[in-house]
Length: 114
Length: 111
Figure 1 (cartoon, rainbow over the protein chains, first blue to last red):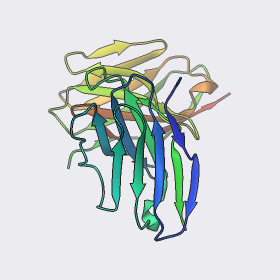
Figure 2 (tube, each protein chain N blue to C red):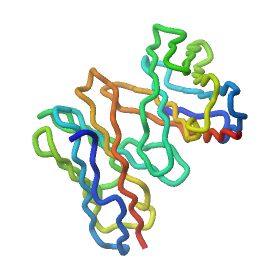
Figure 3 (tube, rainbow over the protein chains, first blue to last red):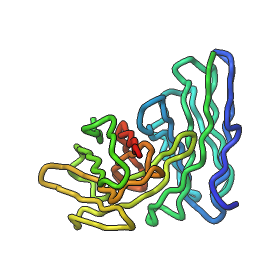
Figure 4 (cartoon, chains in turn orange, green):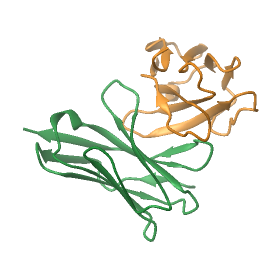
């Protein structure tokens, strides 16, 4: 596609439920990243994928968070047993590779846990 | 831990004036820095980057300055326009595009 696409754009869920967020990167981009942005704050690195290499999961805040990516295409971020502190905007970005470092961001998914 | 922070949370300027947004970083080993602009409801947009072997880099109406001695980064916007109103983040690439972001500075441009 023309840009990074994320869905849904907004998600309201009840505490304790699981949610799945989707990211479609720019076609041909081998690197994909997930960030979390709390209200009024900067972006917190969560995880990135590069081709078939093992993903860097060092930013995932707990074992309730997981992410998958199928080849060099779609990625899903799953949050299990959501908590109120999970409320944030979850941003996905992709770049051509890990050397060409301009990362293009999607519009984000605003998650609200009630 | 490592962090990138900003001196000013908000900056108000008159249209046509120059804007300067500052950023301090703490990871002395990092060699690549990026400025992003984020408009309301949108994802961050790349503005300009600079590598540590440079002190200055210019783009269209924007200039980034890097002072490695004091670990300071700044973004200068010339002739600020209403469309420049946004939150600006500095980010530090600590490797493999793992970006550490600061809290951001909101730029408000007044007519």
